[in-house]
Each structure stands twice: as structure tokens, then as C-alpha cells.
Image (tube, rainbow, N blue to C red; front, side):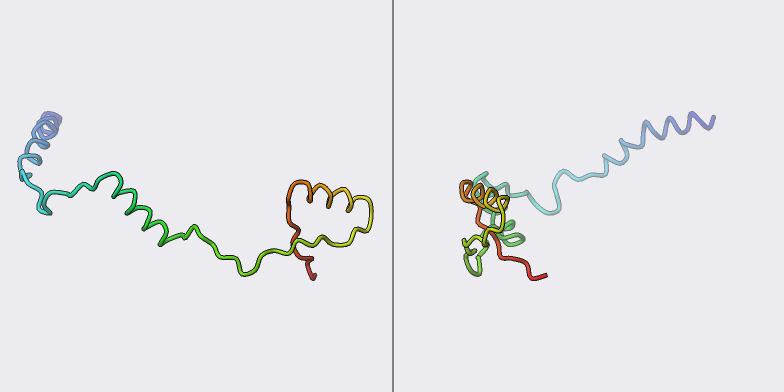
Length: 92
């Protein structure tokens, strides 16, 4: 007998819960923006959180350190060919 009452509750429960809902939303109709306006709104929010434009304090120096051996010559020449700008020498 216990199983029949559970089955009846499972069958009737959703109907009782759904019957209590109202036809209208209490917050009113949702205003759906156009895709262009939505894209702009998301862009503004994203830029506020993580700006995509970074300002450099000063441009990196493009002077290569002095070459000491043939490995330095090969590496620095390859860097020049590939357009890689060297960074400053570490002080430690």
C-alpha cells in the first residue's frame, strides 16, 4: 500500500505544483536587446573587468649584448632575422 501512495504522489505532485503558477511574470516582460546592443553591452562590461589596451611605460631597447662566443653570434643573428627584441640583462 505504501508504494501506491508514492506513485500517486509522483503522478499528482507536478500538476499541483504547476497549477499554482501565475500566467504573468512578477518582474514584467524581459526586454530583449538587439544582437548589436547585446554585443556592445558585453564589450563594455568585459573592458571594465579586463582592459585589452595596455600602455607600455617605455619601448624595449633593441640593443643586443656583446657577443662572447660563436653561440651568441648564432643566437643573436637568428633573433635579428626573426625580429625578436632582446630584453635587459638580469642583475642577479
